[in-house]
Image (cartoon, rainbow, N blue to C red):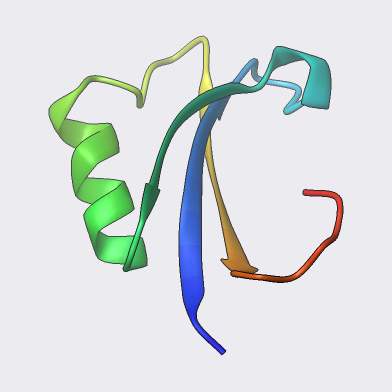
Length: 60
């Protein structure tokens, strides 16, 4: 199975309704680097990286 990492930014409560999608990456390190480069780590927001298998149907 191939694994990907999905990058979101949320409010500080990490609610699903507040998720903003920022990309899909091949490694967690690349997702973290992208979040840092684009200022996603802020005092009023949280960064969420979810590990997912591709070609698998499930709720994220």
